[in-house]
Image (cartoon, rainbow, N blue to C red; front, side, top):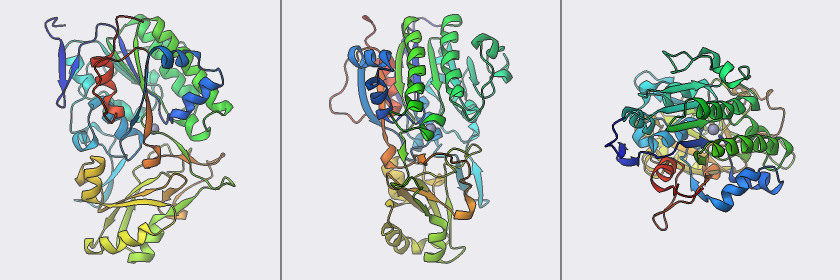
Length: 414
Ligand SMILES: [Zn+2]
């Protein structure tokens, strides 16, 4: 690389070239309490050390508190108004069709990872689910593969081959804790063999959807993670950990899901065919949450009806906030052309569906836990080193993680 270069720029922010490998970890669905409980149970000794010797902040993720908008915010260092990805789906106004936003064609900004690789740094990305791979790896040279399709990675498309043999594990099931373990195991192997300058590891929230903080299932997962983080530390990495979003129980005391079927409500309020509800959480992997989250967007045929419908929706038990497109775009920094006329957010214990008949809940073998709303906005920002020169009184975002790791980590002591 060009040794004269000391920093790169992405989306208006500068990022220093690191002297030591930096590993940014996005733990999917990591409500801060998962870490607290695992440490309390004595199952995460390394993370306990991070709290004592490093830095722990709490920040806000992007709303909708979903996986893709937040992963893209983290790797661009910018909100969805800049990068364009505000969910898995949006309604294309030109065709009236629901369009999946998993394709890099919908990305409106370059990533920090691409800027670093352009500058000649060695960059590696490992994601659990394949749906994020092309978005995270967009414009980047280096290593980029998913655990889900680890055996399909090639030198041409992924910058690496023979991943299962390197990691020493078979390709895991997409619905398993093993999928995330594979990400960490691959991260450790990559740091040992390839020693990337910057690495981004992104897991899946399979465990967090099923297990509350402090339960055996959750603590086992964090113990697994803790062991790999300790190995990354031993290999000399600066570790910066955050989450794409938190996770909440979405049930009553009996464990039954609390659901507002918004399309049914809208049909009653405005008349059938007058409004269309889009749930941007919908994706090809819905077994563990039944496509139920706390964020929905509504497209109205007659936007003049918006104020009346907004008032009526706000009165419904379980609905926390209803905003117009303009209000939502401003408050949550969303691209106005990719959200509907209204944005509806349900509360801590409630999710939003379309119609009862459109959600298959047979895969929910445990009480529903999900995300998407304001109640899942708090996420941890955890570092294995002290941070320096931090501005006072700032509201931290999960998409500040690269800035904090590359520009503020004090790496002289370990
Ligand atoms: Zn997620």
